[in-house]
Length: 317
Image (cartoon, rainbow, N blue to C red; front, side, top):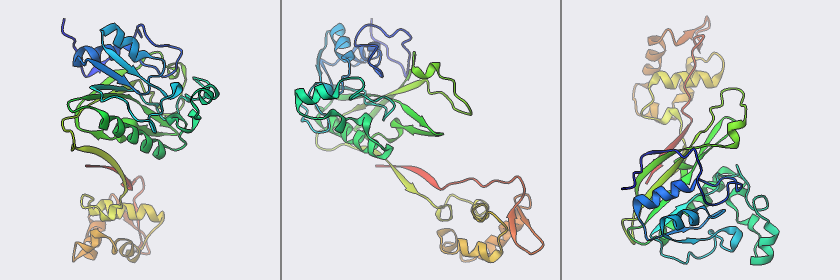
């Protein structure tokens, strides 16, 4: 029977292979389904953890090449020995689970292989931006090693901390042709037994990103860049939104001169010869949004809140 792989997968029963005591490991059934669908002759895994990929490959009759930081291979610094046809990569989800020194003995690795794994472990990187940089270096290094026509399947997840979502799928480099993003349901997670307060939405899924290497020397790379954006310089922002933000920023009644001074240096004003007239027109056109007090100063009407556009994540190629 032909292997069927859909855009949503779920494996309530983990299956046989690897160690379910090695935190963060995935179901071997996922790797079996990937191998059954794409039918590579070989598979490589350069962060193999407890060996789940080997168990799946053995079951499917596929040759496997497995490496890990705990067994003498440092993806960030070691040369990749193969020209892989298919790579499965399951990187750490930042610092959610520490691996070196927790899931395996860092001192033993140091004695056996001559390096301290805690210094090269992605799960021990302090900041998100540093983690993303290291993740993308490892992503591009593996993709560069692929043979032309090869594929990478990357299993990754989202992290939630203090009300902010840190999304690996949003910020990972996407070289070559992005063929598929598969949603994988999560089962039997530690978070399943945790009671959350407030408006926390539990994360119950992961992503499998499939990229294909069409070219040898040149291929597109989709990157995500963070840029600071000022609403007063944005073409898409309306005058109503700009003025509402200016008043929100002041936090108290602002005179017409105050509003002028806040807007004048920016593109919104510089692109309109009659921008002062536009400011006055806008203030008077939205009586439910802008209120004028007895001194002639302006405020947001009670109950009105400006929408913030101060942080944007823009895709770049």
